[in-house]
Length: 218
Ligand SMILES: CC(C)(COP(=O)(O)OP(=O)(O)OC[C@H]1O[C@@H](n2cnc3c(N)ncnc32)[C@H](O)[C@@H]1OP(=O)(O)O)[C@@H](O)C(=O)NCCC(=O)NCCS
Image 1 (cartoon, protein in one colour):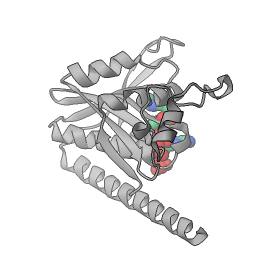
Image 2 (cartoon, rainbow, N blue to C red; image 1 turned 90 degrees about the horizontal axis):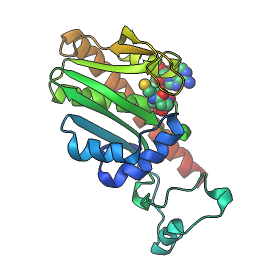
Image 3 (cartoon, rainbow, N blue to C red; image 1 turned 135 degrees about the horizontal axis):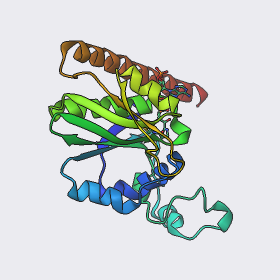
């Protein structure tokens, strides 16, 4: 399959921060991710890679990426601290595990990869992590205006359980609190397994179609 899901490491942080800046109006500072990975025993973070994207092949090209760019290219250029091997990271997400609750802290897909099932792959993986950690509920906050994310969460059985007034510091927007039902309940397990199966089939089929298109064109 085209996408792999891996545990986030310290090496991944600069690339994660780049994607986060494209996804959120108030991104976390890099130090927050470093603390989460190194010090927070409740935290689990993942990255998704497009394994078809190869890092620059030669040492010369890798050096090129480290040199200062002209000002006009600065916005599209990877940060000088981003290692070439992490440039195939296209999405990331994380949660905190607290006794019987797994609370999703962040989830974001690079704008170029949205609508392809990557967000769903992350949410499904986070729920998988919640199962492994023996959590019973998965919860999160989401902006009331963020209907795209809410659609994703509803697909996985999240329902609105509350509102946090003026939760977001940038525009004082309210947050919906959303939660799953008990994920250990057999109804939820069955729904989760079916969604996961359908998603994997979709991603595999799309990967196969793209591969055959590429070989037809060659
Ligand atoms: C929310 C986000 C992670 C979704 O990522 P994605 O990779 O585009 O999601 P997917 O392609 O896997 O789509 C999963 C579901 O999301 C919903 N969705 C995705 N794009 C949508 C759109 N343009 N309009 C409406 N719903 C949409 C659908 O329910 C979709 O399921 P479907 O494929 O069965 O229709 C992405 O939009 C993002 O990074 N947004 C910015 C950061 C953010 O808002 N994070 C959430 C914070 S709470």
